[in-house]
Amino acid sequence: MVEKTFNAFYFRDQIADQIDTCLVYNTNVARAEGNKTNKIDARHLVKKLTYYLMWGRREEDLPTVYVPGAEMRELRGLFTTYQLHKKRNVQITNRIHLILKQNGICVERKAMDKKDFEARIEGFEIAEVWKFQIRCALRALKKAEEEQRQIKEARKKRPDPLVTLHPEAAEKLGLAENDWVQVITPQGNIRMRLHLSPIVDPRMADVDHGWWFPERMEAEPELFGVFESNANVLCPDGAEFCNPEIGGWPHTALLCRVEKENGG
Image 1 (cartoon, rainbow, N blue to C red):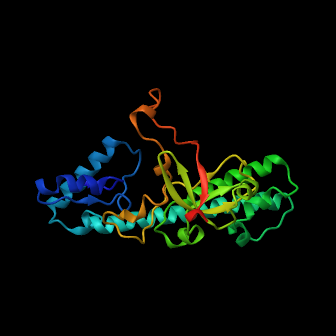
Image 2 (image 1 turned 90 degrees about the horizontal axis):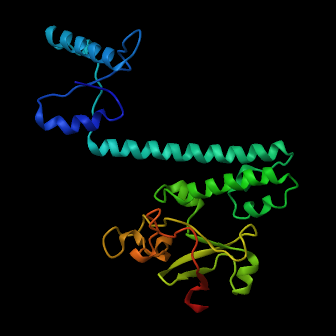
Image 3 (image 1 turned 90 degrees about the vertical axis):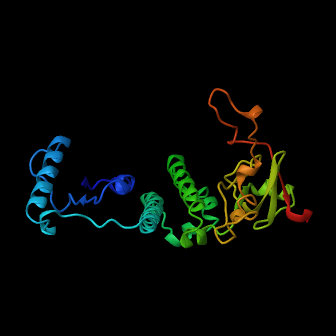
């Protein structure tokens, strides 16, 4: 018998083929009174198990939890992660909305989902410290939206991989909002949709990270399209580029060029 903890199901799986029965004790239903220590918990479990075995193995004497199969546990885990994802996004959106209200600015929540909202922040007459907080919150929201591509609501907000340029930089390159472009480095190139924002430095290109396409085929050579728009394709990974002090590669900032797709 094992106590119901976060890894109880895993532990049960490890010993299942070596024993006849493994029960997972439901501590939420039958909780020991008084001080709670590992030793007290162990004694409590032994007493409950002894009583259960001596008095005919009645279910009411030993409350246990149902142990779902591996597939069901995976589905439950995905649902839990999805709920956390939604909760985090709501918290971030609420914080932005509150900051604006505290400064006398009324903005509909729907407006915060639009591409130009980040640029609109710069035009608000509020102290820089508030703008800084909003920028940080928007960046966190952006990163959250870039992940979980298989979740319908997250993908709806960010349907395409984006590279963000300053409008002046895009104009010099002959590019416009929503153009499909190629981001190119000596290591490779990826396909991205162009987004313009005045808060990006004119010398920089801000590329979404970790793109893959869950709607694509998982088998080779497609592999969910992971090499089409994933920023890792642009990054060096040879041993000669590895930083010996940190054991990592320079993935934060790289020289690149941005061109309209098909040379148009």
